[in-house]
Amino acid sequence: MTHEPRFAGRTAIVTGAGSGIGRATALRLAQDGARVIAADVVAERLDAFVAEHPELDIVPVVGDITAEDGVKAIVDAADGRVDVLANVAGIMDGFLPAGEVDDRTWDLVFAVNVTAVLRLTRAVLPLMQAAGSGAIVNVASEAALRGSAAGVAYTASKHAVAGITKNTAVIYGKQGIRVNAVAPGPTKTAIEAPMRSALAGQVLGPLMQTMIPTPVEAEELANAITWLASDESRNVNGVILASDGGWSAI
Image (cartoon, rainbow, N blue to C red; front, side):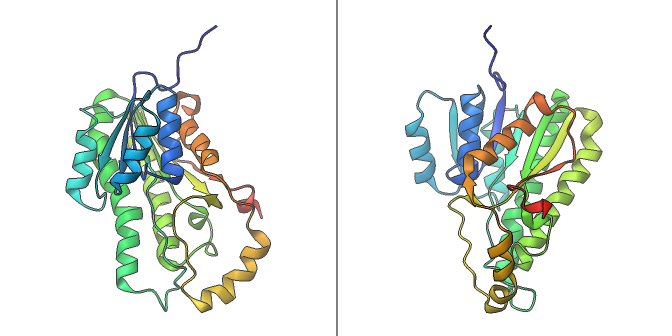
């Protein structure tokens, strides 16, 4: 018996699709039948991605998700239909604690990790409301669950993503729209995570050496994201799903 691909006939938007978890998610969705709007700020990454998979329906969109016109370009490329939104793009904060973080780092981390998530969600909700269905999957972090995984800006931003996820799930759930988040643990991606604080290194270093599991490939997170986006999880809404090798259980 032949099964139809899970996302056949559906359109999905994936941010950060040029590398890491975003790329793995976009590829998995496209391989499973979706038309994927693959968004990234680096054109070369998208060009390489599309060139590697000419058989798949991948629409590359180069856009800055921290700007309204970038968000508009991404959503416009979907041609009026968005069944899945995967807010994957994110940046780290150098592990800077509250006494050391500068305004530029704080503002940029929140622009990418929080405001862009809200703007893209706000932009696709009318399309999902009109269709009476839709799935939004945000990428939170282990830093959304604890205070020892990053600096203050990243930690606060991922707690905010968890809040956006839960509130949006409650408000729009009865309209057929599900909103969930994945909280990754250590993952092999292109995201830069330098330790720019000696104090954070002293405090967090020993904890990380004993608690953090072995990093996994981005495909492991794509598995969780696409499951939450699929009908297989239709009874799951407002959940922050840890995909962290058991880190959150310690």
